[in-house]
Length: 73
Image (cartoon, helix red, strand yellow):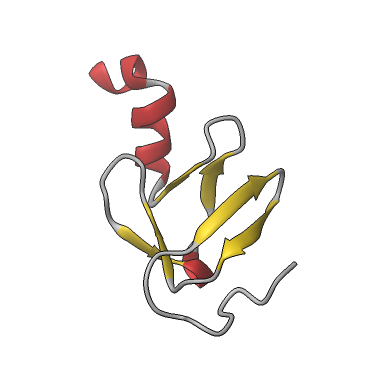
């Protein structure tokens, strides 16, 4: 894996999301939540979808993206 903070630790990183890990394609300080648009610092990234190749800031964002009907209760 490349250094997550590489030569440029500013701006948005580009990642490849893998099962249980991710690979840095372009270094940066954060990724953007696919649901809320919130910036997620790379060292705080915990939730992502391998199939959709997108990051999520919170478990609620995961539910909202993958199981929206579950939140309508």
